[in-house]
Image: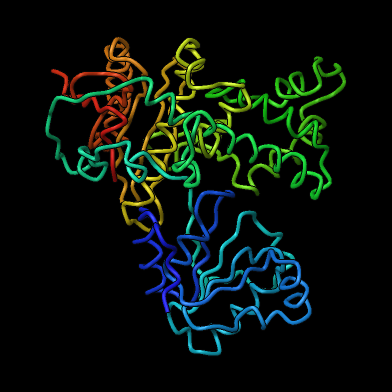
Length: 431
């Protein structure tokens, strides 16, 4: 009997979950709280056990195999509350000769793998779920495909865009539960998420709730920057670090908070990119720490949709976070294994490009992100500089980009510039 919830809204990840279930004995759907993991898993399952229920958790802690009982495919919700469940699933998959599509595990935080006996490689496939994209929520018309850009498919057309709608979706976020809320209270959900993260989840990890919030606020204040530990320390403790505190000491002090945020799928790292696959900059460029959803930094900065319209710089920063979320979701939905890389470019000459998408086969494309049409010419110049730099060393045999594009918030036309750069409203993008 299908457990698909009434009113379930189709997710781009549904196809990926189905594909992984055809290839593996179990699938883990992992991602931040409230992003829709449980509903999506139920849509593919016939029975469920909720490990976050106190009575169930106590029972399963004593005998992990009990979590596996139910009609297949069987959903094990919040499995990380009893880490031994992972090994029970892996053993059952082995015992059944790796019969496909038996179990779906959901998890909203990563688990210390020393607490499990086996990685699950070859038995349990992982799928990373993020909040809803604009395409899934109905705010994007889906007229420009990311896959199509890689294949040279693009049709110019007139569009209608509205910065008020963008501001609303930034502050509301991609949380499925927010779709049915009144607009004036939609921002309450990310605020409640943050309160639970700081006051409940952080102390469980032995972290101070106040300092955890301060670290998150510093990350929100420095959106788009490669924040150093020294700058982060100065924000969190409202003073410059002492002269005798070197980077190793600062790292030791602050890394637990950043690791906690990564483990909770609260932030993601955006790594640097260069065309040569062995380029040092791919590993030496400091990663940018970005949020899984723009509503989280918006809430940390006390932004409402109306206020955001007046705070243009903040609006631009949060629009970049929204665009990055969209590109990550659509890249994952393209069906490649592994997922395409979503990186950024920066070099010693001061050239920066917001997003570079690289497919597993080496093809790549680049996006600059601008809130308004007025800044498109500047973005086009940056993208052309990047292409020319990649071309400048013939001996490296670097590929040309499959596309260059500006993701824009407000414009009247989805078009191609004379230089061949696409101008794509974010509310037109789709996988």
